[in-house]
Image 1: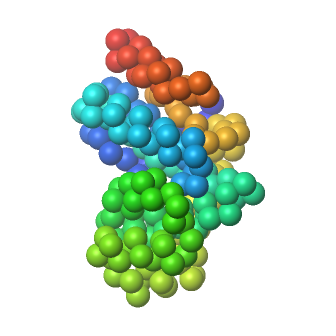
Image 2: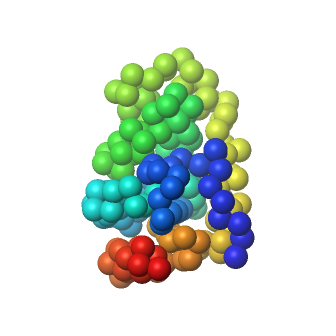
Image 3: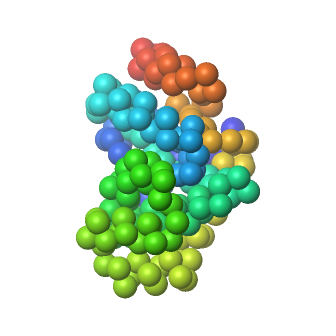
Length: 173
């Protein structure tokens, strides 16, 4: 398997010292990612500081035409220290991922809209998204959401319970 090292470019929540790291490759326009988002929120509350969660982009633009722009929006928010707030909005407001809605969310978060507009029109954060996608290719990610627990892929096709079991096993090890 490729190196799963968490870098400064990653968006992570939870302590660096957590015994378990969960990495998700996701797409903000994906219905299954939206369902996994709710479950992951519950899991993070349940496990607290034992688990660190890392989000990486894998916009599947051929099926989800707004996914790449939503990922760029999240990165523009991250450049203004608001990645996780935008991450929540993009999952909780799936009906609006068009450019006007994305800009509205940026305004809701109190972002500098001139900087946001510049970032979006210049695709300033597209290289980071493409890096995430190259990483996903190395990990043989084929769809979203794709989860890894301490570097081991977890099939959540039939529910997030498998992810919870994998976390429990990793914590018990």
